[in-house]
Amino acid sequence: MTRACVSRETIVKKSILTTLLLAQISTSAIAETIPTIVITASRTAEPLEQTLPSTIVIDKETIELSQTNDVAELLRHHAGIEIGRNGGPGQVTSLFLRGTESNHTLVLIDGVAVNPGTIGGAAVQNISPALIERIEVVKGPSSTLYGSSAIGGVINIITRRAETRGTQFSAGISGGGDDTWEQNLGLRHKDDQFRLSLDVSHLNTDGFPTFKNTTLDRGHRNTGINFAADTRLGAIETAVSHWQAQGETEYWGMNPMTWITGPMDQDFRNSATALTLKTAPLSNWDTQLQLSRITDRIDQNQSNDFTHTVRRSLDWQNNIRLSEQQRLMAGITIEREHTRSLSWGTAFDEHIDSYEVYAQDDIQLGKHRFTLGGRYIDHDEFGGTGIWNLAWGYNLTPTTRLTASAGTAFRAPDSTDMYGFGGNPELNPERSRSYELGLRQQLTEQQDISITAFYTRIKDLIEYYDPDDWFGPLPGQNVNLDRAHIKGIEAVYGFQVGPWSLRAEAILQKPENPDNDRILPRRAKKSLHVSLGYAGSKWDTRLDLLATGQRNDSAFNHNKMGGYGITNLMGRYHIDRHWQLEGRVENLFDKDYELASGYRTQDRIGFIGIRYQ
Image (cartoon, rainbow, N blue to C red):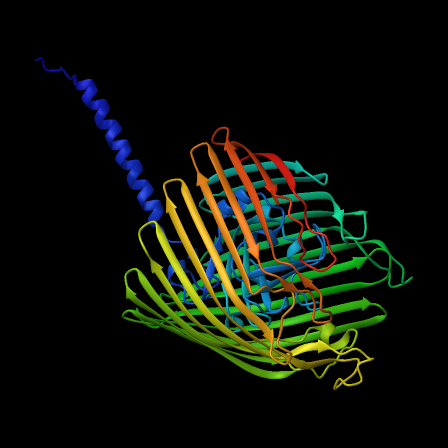
């Protein structure tokens, strides 16, 4: 028997390797325990697991791996978010959040509301994911914090910023089916004095025929720009931001000048600009003043029709820490909106002002957390109205959290409702009352589950009555008549072990009009979303499955759209720490389905690209 001789050099090498290994393990553990911070749920920074309303975050890694050029594609793979689309890229896209109407979801870009004052729903089809850092989705009534249109919830799209010191550059190009090409560039810098970010993206696609009975491709071109700069001037943090999307969309429709159906196209421009000032006059009081301006423009090229919105807003928010257990948030919002439109011979040119005050009290009592909020709105057209929200959270155990909430919300009638075709200046706002119960359970260190039951009752829904319907209360005019009752249950399961991850989301809901017992159009009673991912040292890949039930097409017809299931596959190969190859296949099994009756959807299509960052 002999004893091995171990040199001092070998011992030192092993010690260094052990130290590095322990450091890597420690760093990984710390990274895994860093909480995800969100802003949208309470208008103040808080950990995602502590939010009281149901909140989801689509992070940068998920966005980049998806490689999609469409925000709606990112959103539709989560329970309770459905879309309707009139054809392919760039065509009108509607969002339905928890069974509410398409204009009941407020869309923000960096906290600035971009829903137009002419047609209600934000133009999500024009927002490029290449400019987005993350998306925060808050489900349930949020008008107390954000005002009109937040009946179903709020989607806050947060654009990219420089996060690390120094100068970073990124670039990418991808191409694929339907002669689709996308390019993007990014330049970001951060030091002790200021932070600067500039991102540009461009999408050009021939698309595919809009209707099933047409054969002419309808293309889409979109150039997106996002600029942000911030610095500190004495005690004041100053930030400027500007997001913009501009381009052209081709479609198939009827020319209002000739009444002939055929190929048409329109120019669009959407933008959101903001100046934000932050300071802390006292140790327990910080205040923020934001001045913003949004534009939403559509100009038809084969006729004189157009819709334009310009909205200027002032929002002054104050956060006051009354004690270690209590935090008060209060502020005022002033909006001045100018809308102009010419559509099918009906024109309007309107200025609408609103003045709003809001407050929310947040109290932590041991394992209990309570929030009570309210907002009062003085609106040019419908006068004054008040709304409220109450939420409660209870940490039953360190791994079990119970939540409950009740609240009201509203949507002010837009200019088209009041002054467009069938316009009625006497309309009341659409109002809702919602209730929610939730359970969040950490099953193991690798598994978690959440279950949420919700109920929403909406009244004074605005509908148009055809002039030939003489049995209607006001023939040929928009009226507050319809109602909606929405009840449902959502479940989310997450699992992660090593490089593998699994997320499954499901919803069972019944969004119906109680007057005729009909399910609301383009909303399914049930859907399932499954995402299986692998993140290795060289390869990243993800498989997304979406399955949904049948839907009614419209309140004005009895067309039904069948249920469907689609699968998307995407992957990346890291050549080195800067370069990566990427590819994706949408609608992997080439399923034929509808998001709007008579309109085409995407066939199987593939893309490949290369990226430097």
